[in-house]
Length: 202
Image 1 (tube, rainbow, N blue to C red):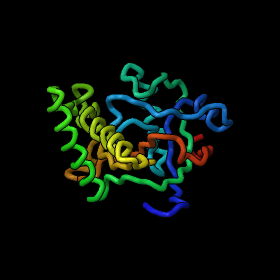
Image 2 (image 1 turned 180 degrees about the vertical axis):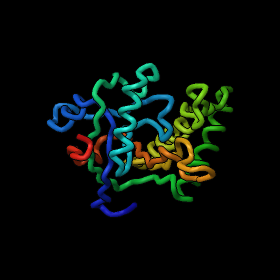
Image 3 (image 1 turned 135 degrees about the vertical axis):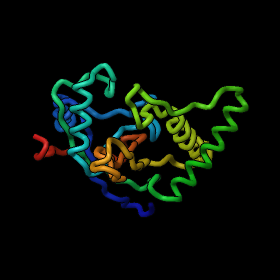
């Protein structure tokens, strides 16, 4: 993506109502997370233009606190909207993005081999996890990709975008999955323009 103005992107963040309110009144800023399931690398995670999926995430996190989907337990599921202005974008829905991931993966293989350590792998978070939610491998590749850009004197990507196929087929034999979504990982908050209330989610 080029152009000094960048591209405006609407996204949503599932959270507790207290967090939503604090973001809206400016008393709180979101911080990048670094969890083993952060499949697009360390960052602040949003659902692209999909408040319903963000709310579903918050509801699922509230109903399953033992799975620790969020840093703090969610008591009252809510969602906050966010406007991003992105100039540097890594899109994993494009061949260019996939090629860049593969190059970074090759670098990770060399690094791990030089250290004499095993490659991280993606693995299920539970017995019924079909999506391999603990994505240690993917996270490590994106982390190295960002670090590689900084070592070359290049700015890191402001957002990594990735389609996530999730859930059961909506109807028999369909390739459409019930909870499929587009996720955004924002490593730094400098591209966040502001937050807004989502009336439909009230």
